[in-house]
Length: 167
Image 1 (cartoon, rainbow, N blue to C red):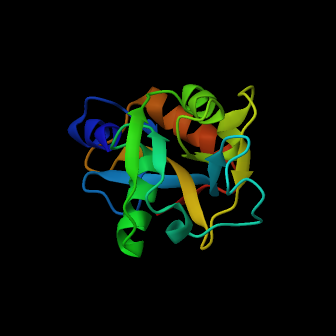
Image 2: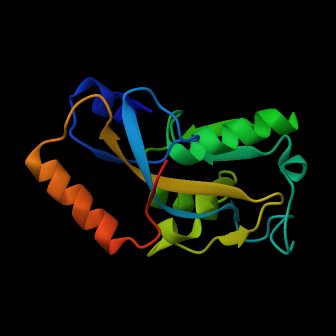
């Protein structure tokens, strides 16, 4: 959310963001891509062989998490609250590769989009039902005209991302 606020305030010309919802005061979001958030479990964990899990299946588990305000954390916190599921956050890290490594080492479970695991150590990824989505958008100001460079970059992103939609 901090990046969205920085775009709205004029501190940033634009930003790639992952925030729930499509409406944020002072910014227009151009949706770029979505992918499922999966449950990362360490080798030998009781959920490792499941075809899918529900949020109730992870109640009471310890988690390795990213800081509050990050896109995956916002989405999973929201989904867990709606499902009435409490969890323990044992460790917070500001790097998804580190999160995956700590899950692999058995320090807890994690929530990750698969594309963030390139080059990470071995963890098992289990689909969550119902599916949770990690969405990436480009935030641009809605109350002022972006700079020429920001407009050129936005145009390039829209041309090279066929699925881009402004919400």
